[in-house]
Image (cartoon, rainbow, N blue to C red; front, side, top):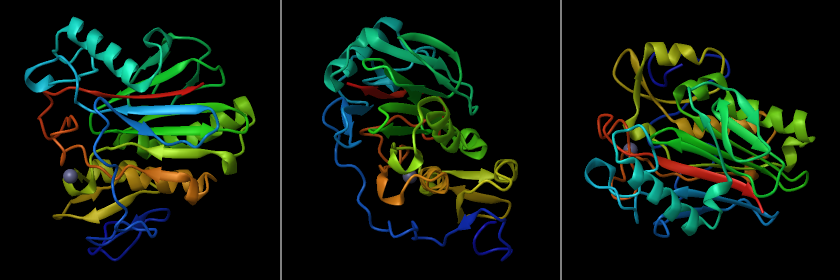
Length: 280
Ligand SMILES: [Zn+2]
């Protein structure tokens, strides 16, 4: 399952050599510099808006400088609240409309109809305009899914565990079951996350994927480098989302300390970015 070693390939896995990002996307530029506190997320013009935060434009200091949006990471709570207001203002959503979940690196995707804490899960979905789905990340990917036809959205937190469990396909399934979405109508975006350049994992992680599709790059024996973004893109494609409707940000959190927090780069003492997605 790891390119260049055993020569065997786990069914459902894709191996890639160094320098290949696969599926015709080699050389695809990453997102440009953030627009201050946020990157706008292009989900088409179906009355659906999304944003991903940068670390710019906040009021936190030290390892949390400056736009830390994570509570419970050691930062001053009042600073995080002020940062949340600034991100909402920059992204253009009401900060009181935000729905969150207690993230546990699982694959549950909860339906929500209003703001507030929705429970324990790693994904949210809604068809209610004005409800702002939000998750926090600091190396894991945020998966934005938008169906402009049935007017429904889902937002997921996908680290290696969520990716190994298939949270992207689970969200596609929830959109279909709850709102009648057809996968072919869905537009998706994979946020900045830790890249294969900086994310070596060991055998327990590799084995956790089992038959689940993943994109690996070679590493030292007993290890592989996991491409979280491309693994999620591949899984969404296999779940029926058209390849042309899946965008990958192409920015590694660990490689961009000027814009992004990274749990691995900063040895756990760092801030969190936030992804937000809503129907206008
Ligand atoms: Zn990197």
